[in-house]
Image 1 (cartoon, rainbow, N blue to C red):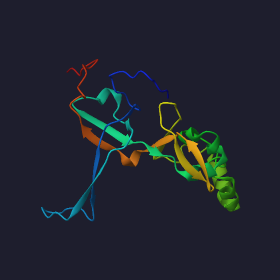
Image 2: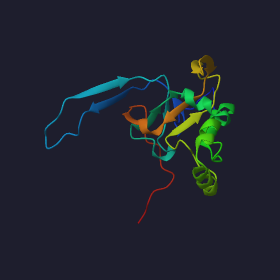
Image 3: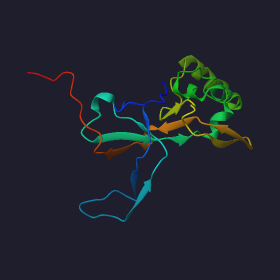
Image 4: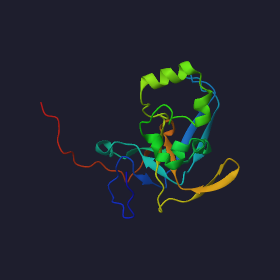
Length: 179
């Protein structure tokens, strides 16, 4: 992963962008057979979003995005994560996946099972943490009652959204399927 102060016009998977709006319907229960229940439309404009459309599928005015979110303060309870929060994106040992006090609270059978299973791949499957960079704003988190400044951000894949944007155009394909 890298950041560039001089972005190109071509969007790619993982690019950080701004200026997009999210509209999410909130429903109490699914609609059935033409009967619509009352619903609420929640509209938000995140400061930054991340492109989740694979590079080869970006086009036809459709873009899949996820909003940038602030890091969860609880991540700082784990010293392994605290050193570098992007470690959340990588494989780790069972002990590294939990704060030391949480590991100590596991009974011996749980510890043995976790150790026997080997390294844990991605403890938070739904998240991806972006490294700090001067292009990203700094914000305050409270770690154990004291404020800290950070500019780590994360995306939650469960919060993706689709937009139609006139500026997203199909690019010529490198190859086409032929019979």
